[in-house]
Length: 288
Ligand code: CO
Image (cartoon, rainbow, N blue to C red):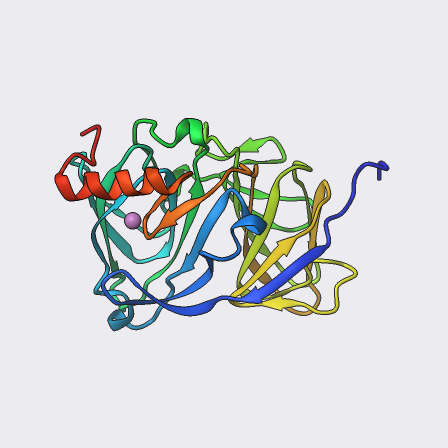
């Protein structure tokens, strides 16, 4: 190992919290509204896995977004989506929707679950820097089949949504915060080593099994836990008797002031007021 390859230690961890969102969706919030400095450029992470349609059927009816990107990753079930640009579609099992709201999108997201009533997925919000807050909105819609799966020498199986593993690049590209978004499955008794840019913030979200996210750490982390890393140039995750599955997400911090209300995130309170005034008077959407 070269001297500059510092393995990141776990800086902080916590359990995702039951939260009521949208029109009455019961989900678990990994973070949002509080830990913004620690997770910069990310703002919010929601886990909407449920076996019960009553938890998610109310959905997220028409609402605006400005100044951010929302990344929806569906593991199982359907999320119906419609927006002010006239798009209409379904994010289905294994699909990803990377939406750059930019200057403004009004949309609705309605989880429908699968035939058995199960809905499994995650939504991450990534902040846009000042210079890109008012960019034209856009989508990167990625179907399950377009997301490469890489088997690493260490035994991990990784779906590469954004970023790169062993020369294989994920389909989501050209995102301002230079994010990496990996879905990592690690069998029992194996390990996963992954380089990360030294200046990026990195977190993992565990959603199956248990794993050790820090060789020197006191314990393994399990379902529903957010693991936030300290500084360094690589992440090492290992397993003992159990397998683990987790998202590994990194991004370049923006270090800009945040003015945030609900689904709109700007740099100043004045920009927030303008956004909500525009939403009320019908001039919010700049590009249809
Ligand atoms: Co939304």
